[in-house]
Image 1: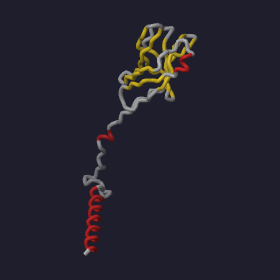
Image 2: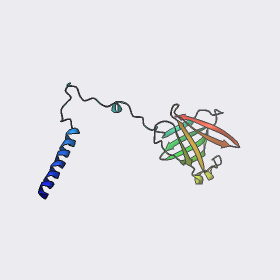
Image 3: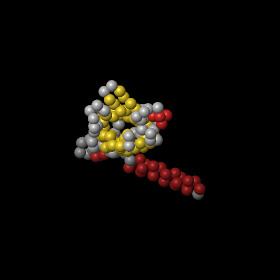
Image 4: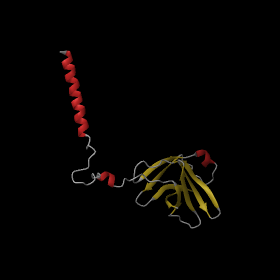
Length: 157
């Protein structure tokens, strides 16, 4: 009697496995219309990727033609410099967090205070908020110098 119950249970398991295998397979045959199987809409729609912000950026809203800010994002670091015709001075260097989703992005950069401590025109902040606007491909942040704060706007070079 125990053997019959055991064989019955095994038969049920085999039948269930065969049913699941049959439901998950198209038998390797094309559809009856002779056309290739249709692709889902997900695979035909381009997948948006997070923006790649690595590279060089330059200020677009400088008040002077002789002085502007440039930035470079590379290797997990953002560096921002004051740029004049004959000199470059450090303003900010700190961490960079790459976008993890498409669209606008913001991150708080932790400043490398050791490097900035010896730079006369560098920010004295420990952290700085950076913003990326996807629709205009623009990087922005607030910069304070001599008691005046301005929003610096940058485009890729």
